[in-house]
Image 1 (cartoon, rainbow, N blue to C red):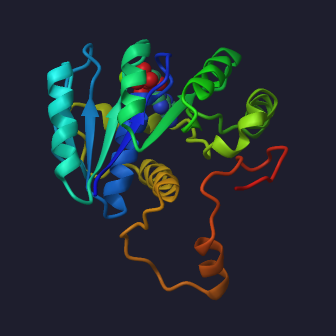
Image 2: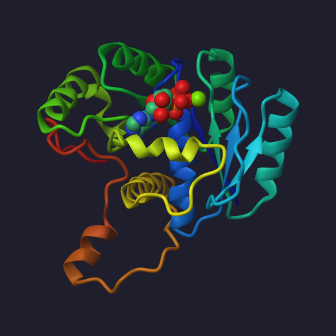
Amino acid sequence: MSRIICIIGNKGGTGKTTLSHMLCQGLGLLGQRSACVLTDTSREPLSPDGRRYVTADARTPEALHKVVGKLRTMDGWLGVIDGGGNRSEMDRMLNGLADIVLLPFRDSHEDLRTVLRDLDAFPHAYALPSQWPTNAWARDAADRSVAQILGAHRDRLLHPVASLSASKLLLQKSIPDGLPSNVGNACRALARQVLEVLEIGDNAPREPQTTEQAERSASPPPTVLPEGYASTAHH
Ligand SMILES: Nc1ncnc2c1ncn2[C@@H]1O[C@H](COP(=O)(O)OP(=O)(O)O)[C@@H](O)[C@H]1O
Ligand SMILES: [Mg+2]
């Protein structure tokens, strides 16, 4: 069985395209095969050279239909569809065909209000804090705004993807040999959370674990509040 992950949301600039590529790269690093699917008519397809995933061009409705149909037949693959933004109808359609939906949002009240509306519109979607501040004070303030505005949806919040200037390397037409390790780590961390939500184990070879580590990794909650949030409720 293949799975389809859609990264959508009715707002531009939240990081959908970057996160689509980060997720696919991370899935590749964890030994999963994935395709990053472009739907944004204002963007050009990126070369698959050097990436740990394939890229697909689905900028017309016909092409999207074909790509999704093909993905459905590719056993064990994950398709990551980059939504494009500002297209509510398209988002509704992608929500209908996805196994999981991710709604990225940045650290601003405008983004928070938008993602709150989108969480209501897409009851099975997860909110993904994107370009999250790395400065401790700024991060704390951002986490408090999230707890305040999205507190009722705490079980649908994923761990933040930090602001990482080198993440833009993934959006170059061709990516450079050897991405910085902080980008690789962020890609892997994102992919791990998505695999947990989908209840798919990753295929990466692991170092032998201590019993304590094994216990911790055996029961990770699928979604948790970022550290420092008001509640520790898990589901
Ligand atoms: N994690 C991140 N760290 C730093 N900059 C980021 C990150 N994610 C996205 N960006 C930057 O934010 C801008 C918008 O990102 P993009 O992925 O194009 O968003 P969208 O596809 O939602 O419009 C781009 O300039 C991108 O490089
Ligand atoms: Mg985009």
